[in-house]
Image (cartoon, rainbow, N blue to C red):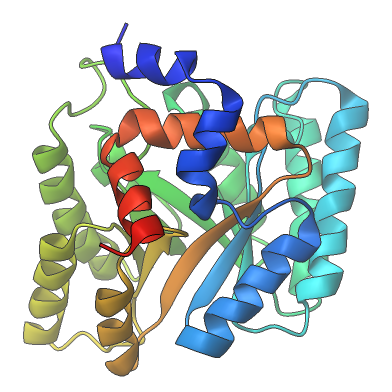
Length: 298
């Protein structure tokens, strides 16, 4: 097992919360909405608001999650700068594809009636095929439905080519889930190089890339390449996580007249926030340093 993962798993929840709380809006829908409002009012940033929680197995818990999303839609419906992200493992995939797809469709339909965008998150490799199947079926009907693809997987370029005949919003990221060498790149540098290639591939196939990375050289490489090839600035956007210190870069992009969308997670229960934060810390131990730097202003 990865030593970083072992160390993070052994960290007590209060310590995780101390180091990583800037990455969570707080508890309850109001915290996520308040953070989205603050980001837009103060910095001109857009948001995708997400309810933390994975691996929901009991139907009553799935139904409760669906109701949270319906309430989110009601609150966010007058905020064109906000969108919503959701996960298959929250919404019934552990029971059946049909049940999960029905829940996804219900949420997407409610959001569409208010002009809100929905993004279906991509989880680990065991869910890739079924997530794409559900996405394609719902995208047939709704234009407000987007998807996430991960550059670390060998299959992703083929998935882009086979994605959908209609234009799709696609968050392209390296992915947070550690995958085996048989199916995925193992070098972060290789993942970032592949992400750069896949941004152009998405554009070539008529899609809208949502370039999700905090790597400044990669962001600048994308901007320079797309500017050089005359890609309109409204044909793509950048996305980053709440709490990662990239304010100067974000403001530079905003001043170019482009969207920077921040992933704004909140929790109904703190245990789900701890799980999310531990995964982020394991994937990026430098997060603790970033948080300390923010806390002490150095």
